[in-house]
Each structure stands twice: as C-alpha cells, then as structure tokens.
Amino acid sequence: MLTGLLWLAHAGVIAFLGTNGQGPVISDVLQLALGAVLIYALLQASRRSEGIALSFWRLTTAAYALWILAQGLSVYNDLFPSLPVAWTNNMLFSFWFVPLAMAMFLDPENEAGKLDALVALDFVQAVLICIAAYLYFFYIPKSDSPGELAHEVWQPYFIGYSFVAGAFVLRALITQSRDARILFGRMGIFLACSGGVDAMYYYGPGIGLKTGAWFDLMWSALLVAPILIATSWTQAESPELSLEAPAHEKRIYAEMFHLLYPLLVLFMSLRIARERLGLAAFVVLLSFVCSSARLLVTQNRLLLAKEALRREASRDGLTSLWNRKAILSILERDLLRAERDREPVGLIMIDVDHFKAINDSRGHAAGDAVLRIIASGIAAVVRPYDSVGRCGGEEFLIVAPACGLAETWELAERVRTHIANCNFMVGGSSVKVSLSLGVATGQTAGEIEKLLHAADTAMYQAKNAGRNRVEPVVAPDQGRAAAASQSVSPAPHRDFWL
Image 1: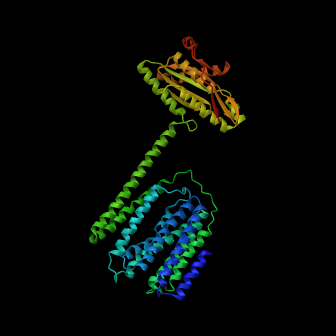
Image 2: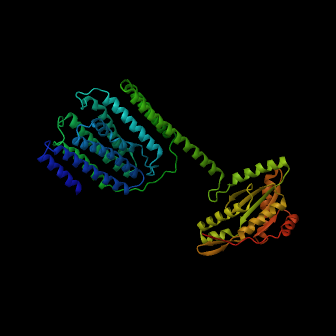
Image 3: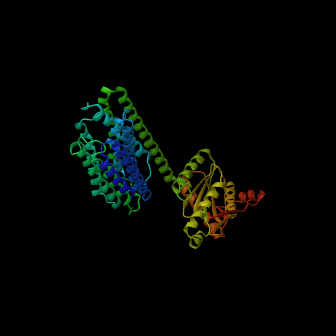
C-alpha cells in the first residue's frame, strides 16, 4: 500500500514538476523513501527466515543499505551542489550489489544463518577490490568532461553486473534446494532487468536525461520489484546441516579462490600507484591486513578443531571421563613407571548395581543422568593424580599409582561410601544407587591383561556377594585392618535432583 502511494506520488512529481524547480530534489527524496520501505521489507523477510535464507536476506539488506547511502548523498548533492561528493556517490552506485553477490558463497547444506568471521573478512576484501576497481577503471581514466564519466569506462561495471545476474540464474537452475531456487532465481531475474535499465540510461533513451525526468520512474520500479519479492517470501524448507565433511577437492578450490582477492588488489594497485602512490599503498596495506587476519582466524580454527578431535578421541562423550582406550593407555603408562620405580599400581573395576532396572523404569535419559553424576562423584573422591575412565555401559575403571592392595581397597571403599550416601532424585522420586567394586594391584606392564582380569573377577565376586561392596582379588587383611583402625565418620548424605 505505502509502496504504491510513493510510486504514484513520484509519478505525480515527474508529471507536474519534472526537472524544473524542486522537482529533482523531491524525486530523489521519494526514491530515498522507497529505499527505506525496501529495507523494512528485507528486515521482515529476514525475521521469517533461517539458514541460508536468513543469510541471503541479510546480505541483500546490506546491499541496499549501500544504495540508501548513495541515494542520500544524491539528495545531499541536490541541496548542496558545491560540496564534492560526486565520486563517492558514483562508487556506491557502481558497487552497491557487492554484498548481494556474496550470497553466491552461501552453502544450503552447511549454512547456519550466522555471520562467520571468514565471510566478514572476505566481504572486506571484496569491498577493497571494488575500491581498487573503481580507481582503476573509473577514477584514473580521463573523463570527457569534469564530474562525468566517459561511456566506455562503464563497460567493466556492466560486465561485473551481468556476471552476478547470470551466476544467480545459474545457481537457481542447478540447486537442489527449493528455497535457494526461489531466492536466487527471482533475484537473478531482477538483477538482469536492473542491468538492462542501467544500459538504457547510459546507452539508450536515457542518455542526457536529468534527475526528475520520466526515466526516474524506471529507477523507482527497480525498488518496487525487490519489495514485492521480499514481502511475498515464505520459507518452505527447514535448514538441514550436513554431517558429512565437504569434498577435499571442493575445500581446496574454495581456499584457492580466496587467494585471488589480494592478487587482484595488487594487480590494480600497480597502475593506481602511477597516479596516486600513497592511495595505492593504503589499499594494498588494508588487503594485507585482511589476508593476515583471515590466515590467523583459519589457523585458530584449525588448532581448536585439533584440540576438539584430540579430546573426542580420548574422552567419553557422556561423562567426559577418559574412554576405554585412553584409560588403558594410562594404565600401561603407569605400569611401566611402576616397573621402573618398583611401586605397585592399584586398579579398581566398578559396576553400577541394578542399572538396567533404572533404565527400564525411568528411561535412558534418567540413566544417562545417573551415570554423569556417578562419574562426577568418583572424580571428586579420588586423588588428583588418579585416573578415572568409563569402560562402557555402566562400568568404570580407576587407576591409582603408588597404591598397594590396602590403599587401593581404602580408596575403593571411599568411592563406594560416597555414592551410597548420595540420594538421586529422578522424576520427583528417590532412587538409591550403589556400586560393586573389584580391587587388584600390579607392578609390571606385561601383566596388564592379567591385572584387568583379576579386577574384573573381584568385581563379580562383589556382585555375587550381595552388591554394594568392595572385593579384593585376595583377602585384604591389611586393608581391612587399616580401614577398621580409622574411625571414619559416615559420609554426609547428598541429594541429586534429575
């Protein structure tokens, strides 16, 4: 409704005022108002979108924000013609579509709709290319008359504009995503029409026309079209993130493409330096800063990914304890050290009593929560240099360096008592959890399998003897005597809500 009223008002201004008096100023102001309506429509489309569509509309909003800035400078130039803003205005009108062209790099399978640091840096590099191209093709060549550009220097602009429009249409034809087909198809057709109108202005019936002439209605129509596209947009697909990594060749080509940015800036700056050495040096410096920042961001992400992979390879995903492979490697390492130092290594095998009943009656989510709390409880009781791992299911393993049978039995008893005194609240009701623990010790790396078997056998002895108890591989007279000699007060009762 508002869009139609503004366009009709523009038509009235052109019919009654034209290029006379305040006609050009009012014409530019009405186009500026249409641009503001377009920005509002694009923001509303962004709110109705997610995934690649959200990123697409954000980039489109950024593109037309540049157009709004250029149109605002046109109004400013109409009001204050003595102030030199023509070159800045020409550059903004020439490359307003660059943010929209960045949409070609959006991936429907992996785009999450968030602003990525690398995309932002690539955008800055693209802006620098536009500045260098503007200086190379527009500013350095001599114009026919002061303040106006020669017609031949507009050819690179139309080539770039046609390339973007064609790329959008091609993307719409080959994409498998319905939403991407609609977005790129409609916008590609619009860009092709927009380029045609520009060509008509510079090479057709628009030659020599001033602001306020009938051709201004064509520019206004180019603002009405994207408003209709944005207001009619409805997303039909939910974004799906692919679990598969991109193909190796695709990743290499993508990274090689980004190397072209500084190369193009450097190439065009060589000619710019002949006329404006300081300006060329500044452009090259900014390009170098962006390239270096991109390299640092990429390196930081590689380090984070490496650390995440290392952690994932050695940690249990549910409890964050060491996984089976890692805890067995730690056991082997400690046994090698024990063999050298002639000190025993204690091993405690743990099994959660009646855990299947918890899963069956409370659900697997409650069972997972119980395992996480048990893991936290065990980690809180052991010594800082002891190692705790999850062997799978409801079984845990503790490696206790420099612990004889008595000390290992006492550590296992502390773990058992701590968990037995914890009250687990699942779904509003209390669940008692207990552990059966088997204890064994070893001193040489060659007996690791024997040691694991002994601890596992002792654990099953504890389960057969009634559960919620600690059983050593042999009768721990010294361990029991040591435990009995200590007047240890019972562990405090703890409540855990799930």
